[in-house]
Image (tube, rainbow, N blue to C red; front, side):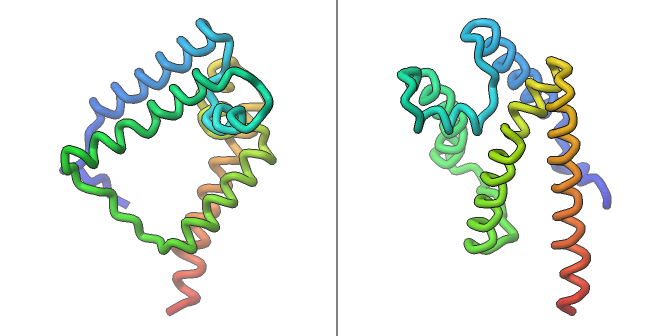
Length: 145
């Protein structure tokens, strides 16, 4: 595996990471809420009356994609079919329920709080991702040829 130096953008990645960290810090310090996307989305379907901030947060996740589409930015190339994406989405949803949160809640906010549960959950998420890529890209690809 080699780095694509033409498209390698460490400064924008650093800025994006800093903004995510700032947003997480603001949300927990101002609202007392952990910035976990699955929990924020799931809270929309509960009886709680705190949906305005949840919708605002989710709109902030979607707005950049809409803006990029509006200015005609290149679209990402997906190397998977619709059925694969649906199955992957279901598995990710199942994993977030099983792990009591997602990578944003555990990986960003939980590790920052030095939560042992979040550290273990993030390690499991990463190992599952590594194993999935290995199986799909190497084990199954070799069996298909």
